[in-house]
Image (cartoon, rainbow, N blue to C red; front, top):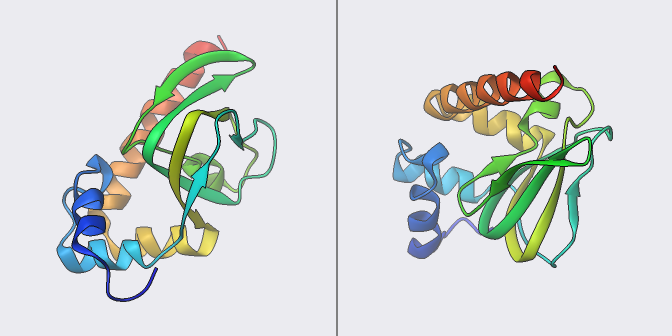
Length: 142
């Protein structure tokens, strides 16, 4: 995304709970990371067991999350996924599939690291989400 980030993009990012505590400058930096992509209905965004190389922020639409073929969560605008494999440098723990047309902001590993380095508030929220997801995954596998 170009340096001159439209106000609508800043406003959309500010509405995302993960980014809500960010300053306008931080939101502009986030907008300049990654690539905004449209995705079609049924597109597999991440696949359980595969290496994780990207972080996804769902900016519009819906997606479903499955672990071992069982649906465990639904994602909507503002939700994110893919962080666990990037943080632990391990395989994906779930499969996420678009339900209907959607848009995602995709950050590669280096962009994801820059995001965490740039904003301690984002890093804290992400760590909380990872802990919650690990706890939920533990109940699925027990």
